[in-house]
Image 1 (cartoon, rainbow, N blue to C red):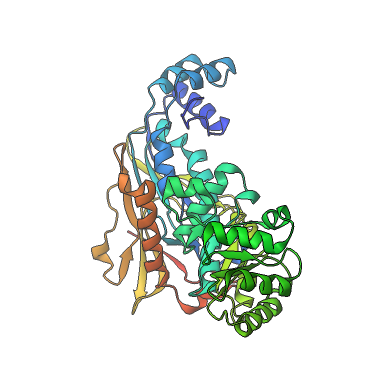
Image 2: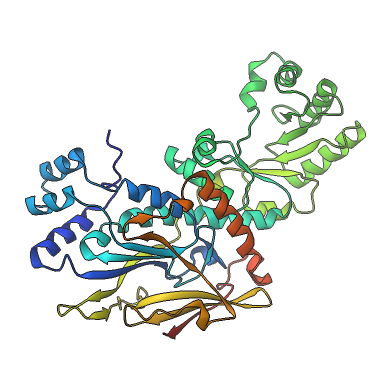
Length: 440
């Protein structure tokens, strides 16, 4: 099977390319922009994620023999376009928000500059990666905010497609989760992994006590025992009897969690296991986590809600042409004007204005020309948001791999501190800061 990512593409990207090669517009220089018109689900901010993944996939975006044969056999494009694609390599420039950065409506999350031919066919890949990962990251950030200082573990692999599960674990880690159950995410992205036993382990043995003894013998007394297979109170008593008061933790995966957690804490303390941690894992989302803030819970494990974006499985980003050269070589700003789906033309520079370290607006300077972009020097009270990710086809490798994930995680932690207090609320509302456009 080919490692190429070139056919992770909608057919109309290539039919547009085919037509552009025919009418002579394929080599016109263009600027495409990836952005969200609004924040779905009434979210107050979004989190950019997937950038490092996208860059690695871009490196493999080329058409080998298998891909070209498919296009010929299915008559997707003509022979001239197949010949063009045979030598395709993106040679343009991509500027974008750093991974882990916050975004708001209209934020130019990604700006792709190149010929129409080489830039238009990146649309589907860019959107599929950033829409998925940013949705997971935004949900993860909200859960992290709700959890406060209590650790979070991602454990949703069984509720997602196999590749999506790995990407979700990566996005969650960037936004504050401390570990994942997914081993491939650990291998590929450096996310710490965790996991002990499921209910099947207890059910395998002739008694709960036999299961607990075997687990403690294998993993030590610092392990976490799952105590709700049968009766929770009996499970807690058996766990402490087997492991002693040095038992590392117990996990609860069912019941009315605030009530059950309080009862388990009281029972553990009465048995002398006051340092034993309580982890809860039953269908949690940010609202359930927030509801447990006053409960004696030490850690959370989140699955289904996280990997599905907690009700918002896509970030709703779009990829639009915002500037192009005309027949004479001059630059023209272009924009879609459809009702409720309009876009703003022109090449853009983005800044976040700050007041005493708190974000006050998303400031976007719009240029009708190609070279007159505003710089940070023009906005001393703001932070520049864009960085070069690809320059003339050369990818910035610092954003890739496990090291890139670590950088994104640290960046997200820093920029989240800039959010105003109203952004931390979980209720549906307008974006936490306004998007303000100015002419460059």
